[in-house]
Amino acid sequence: MTRAVAVMASVFIIFALAGFAGAQELPAAGNLTNAGSAYAAEYRNGTSVTRLAGENETPNMSLEPVAGGFVAPLMLTDAGDGTGRLFVVDQVGTVSVIDGNGTLLEEPFLDVRDRMVDLNPAFDERGLLSIAFHPAFRENGRVFAFYSAPLRPEGPEGWDCTNRVSEFRLDPAGPDRADMASERVLLEIDKPQSTHNGGSIAFSPRDGYLYVPLGDGGGAGDSGTGHTPETGNAQDPANIYGSVLRIDVDDISAGNVPENATRATGAGVLYGVPADNPFVANASIPPEIYAYGFRNPAFISCDAEGNLYVADAGQDLFEEVSLVTGGGNYGWRLREGTHCFDLLNFRTPPGTCEAVGRRGEPLIGPIIEGGRDLGPVIIGGRVYNGTALPDLSGHYVFGYWNGNFAAAAPPPGWNASGFPGSAENLTPEDVAMWRLQRLNVTPAESTGAFLLGFGEDEDSEIYALTTGVAGPDPSTATGRVWKIVPANATAPLQT
Image (cartoon, rainbow, N blue to C red; front, side):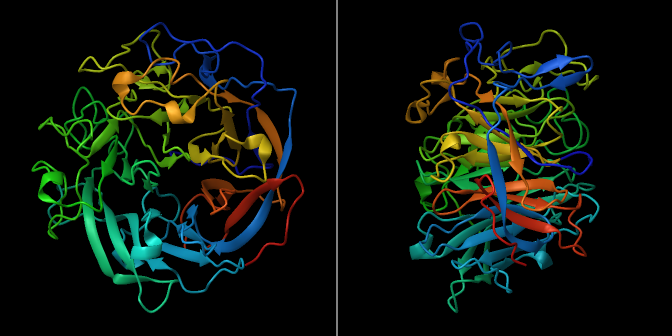
């Protein structure tokens, strides 16, 4: 998120029909950038324009109010423990519980407000950004949080904050509260600027490892204080910024802990590095890095097969979602989406640029690209796997900060279980772009809102999180949770 925009007057959703007619244009053999795809956004008359499929068909859906009274809800998740509870992450530092009966509990499940950096109530990208329950949470009570703490005393002078990945344990006194005294800090990453922190952490159902997205350090153009000169951080795999990490929170045996691991805490070894991480054998690259070349991968999620989707916020023109695999370079700041990027002129893409990185590796383009006509700043979602919205089955549902929603359908014949586990095996067909279509959604209440995040419950039904103000102002309580449901299937809002 980089700028405020007008509050939405009505809510829309973009959704792609599997039956859209039109051939998918693929790049030249060996080129993975998706430049020239029929579904890549266009640069036209000094701005960016999204290519939509099937404009003449507009199915309808509704937003059903679930709970209110939050400040800036960024994420919703379940614990995978069969209780039906929903956990709502509020940027100001708390996690609230909506119990299995739909009641919002008064006491927070987790509260890190006294451990966080002070937030700017007008606008801020820092805060409590996400949580992730261990796949075996029912048995071990472990939950992980990603939040912005004040800069460590050991941090570089003049830098902004330190992002933490911490583990907490369930409070023995009850299932609706984490034991705040149990915190163990796994990772501390110092940040030069306040923006581009990454955000949603997630365990993959495929391998059980924890994935952690990190922004390029903040600021414009991946440049300035704390950024690698000439290349920027995201194209410099020797540093950890602009990447997605993959760590093992269960195995900290000697053989699973490389000497060059990034951990910066005094608590000792608290995580391992999977032996098949792509850069483990390269002593000059942090072994935790799974993929790189991102600007601000604030939203990550896995589908039922464990494929990793990363929504990366753009600079001035293009928003994108990538299917991410091990060792991949996703292009920033050589490219913004499928388009070339000019550090000296953000708003005019050059006509040509490299299709490979500094090590000769192919740059991998997004599977979804939107222009600023749909809105500023992508809000990443997830692949829908529920039953209430059959038209969205298999679609990646997402949106934009100005309140527009979105979803995209994979190419015909897409096989989620066949996506390569390594960038070395990618083909243009593997990363062919998905298709978009506009859909009207009936708001449950006539209210403007900023869209902040998505989530899903144990039944894989999908939720959206909004707020009525642009920043995490604790004096307000306009944040709400909505369930995406069939058209006009709404219920009263609980507060």
